[in-house]
Length: 394
Image 1 (spheres, helix red, strand yellow):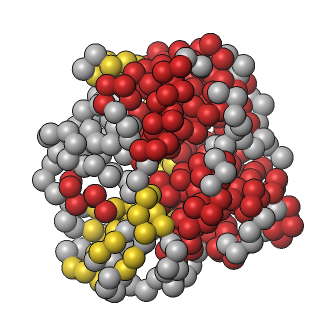
Image 2 (cartoon, rainbow, N blue to C red):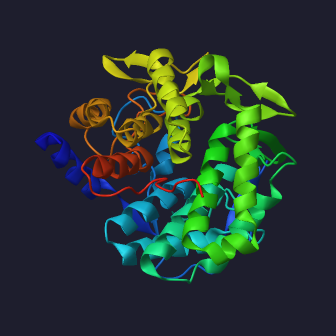
């Protein structure tokens, strides 16, 4: 590793911002344009959360109201933080974030999308996606395996049961429910009955983690069968042989052939490596490099979707490409893939920005998610262990 890379990894680690999770009033969600009281579990006094956009005003050009995210934490980001802190030897701190996840789990076993760490008690508990649920459960499984702390075993099992309840007849997991119509209007009645390739990867690695770390629970819930059925359904319904990639997903049996960066090749490559489909993984990575490459204000990166906007660089989604090449034994290629992200850190400081310019859903703002991916990927590149989706097919 180059010295500047090690330096920026150390800076990135120190740049993460954590806040106590405190409710100063009743928890509430939003139903269309109205606040709706909701119940959540007991919030432990030690509960902690990562702040997802800690400096929303660092760069000019944000949409009005974006600064409101300064106290917001996204459940997916907290899952990444649990993984990172556990791997980094900060187990007590990881446990404090796990306490927040435990409190925020809905009675049926799933999680909403984001919440306010301190203040008015907002929790978007009605915006539920299978990927978020899978990441939260995966982080808790990895934490439990590393620490021996079984305090979250019930939380994990409830999440697994919810995901199994979302599984369709083919073995794929449906999206969830709820959607934002605009910045002010939330529709909690929307049913996300599509299947997303991204979500299948999330859930598949969760199944593998439980099979590896808690075989008794895996046997009880028949997760080996679930993983096998999901794998077969992915190959049958979502693989696009002619393009050497996966589709974004499917709805009512109809393939969605939009090329999403993670589903098409970066996250999908890790899925194929884990099940010994190395040729397919290499083909997907090469497809991404050929089709998704983009220059944004001189920065080389990879756009999130094809066709259509935005034409920005999706930093977080690009980082898994580094792990793909590394796990294929292409260390030099992985180093080369990591270098632009280090350069972006040098130019924009840390926490790493989510994207290098303002676009809808891809803000030019320091953010926890790309910074945590930067740390998790960078440490593996340094030879300091695999953290994200290191499990193999069982």
